[in-house]
Amino acid sequence: MPGVAYTLVHVWHLDPALALGILLVGCCPGGVSSNIMSYLCHGDVAFSVGMTCASTILAPVMTPLLMKITAGEIIHVDAVGMFINILIVTIIPVAIGCALNYIYGKKDCFPTIQSLMPGISVTCLAIIVGGVISTVHDDLVARGLSLFLWTFAVVFCHNTLGYLLGWLAGKCAGFNTAKKRTISIEVGMQNAGLATVLAGNFFATQPLAVLPCAISCAWHSISGTILAGIYLKWDHLHEKK
Image (tube, rainbow, N blue to C red; front, side, top):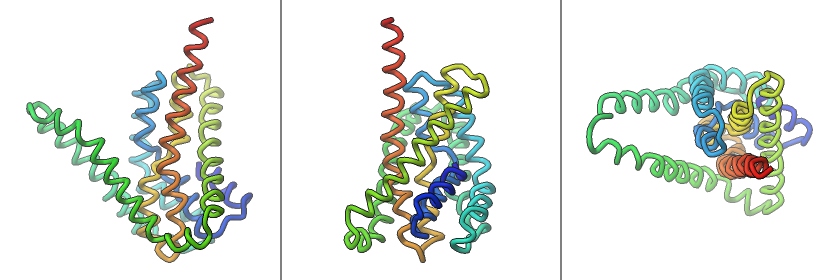
């Protein structure tokens, strides 16, 4: 995905700020919502969770390193600061969640609290996205629909190519249908929420960098749902035959 993002940035001749946003999305780990999409389309959920965990654990090192390689010619990348920020945003909360789950998992009230967490996380992500989008309000108003559509077109290409390349990777490896679907979704759906936070924290001098990240936040969930529906439709058609 970093390679696809780097290619698209140069093919579409994007502005430096928008290029930073696309590259950042490509360099981030797989999104957690990919696990849900894999479940919905009868993919290999355990495989999906394993891939997400692996990419998330590697993210504090790999995301700053990949950004240094792909975006270093556009802007100075604070690799150390990004490493610390990703630890705070991803690894530490996951570690705390695992600890709380282990310690309080058998309490009667815990399942209720646990069931509230997805809604709270989505609400918090929406607040973050809304906050960072407000920083580019003037640019959006000045350049209007054309800026949004241009950025969305690149996000769409990046996301769709991820799905296709993930499927082809599974096919080349000789995996079964469930695993091919899982890899397709896992590769295509990036942790755009993390990208949005990083763009706001480290590329404040390029405020438009958050725009591709914010659009990706919404579009990855929509496209993932659509793709899962297509896979299910494919199953139903073959069952009838």
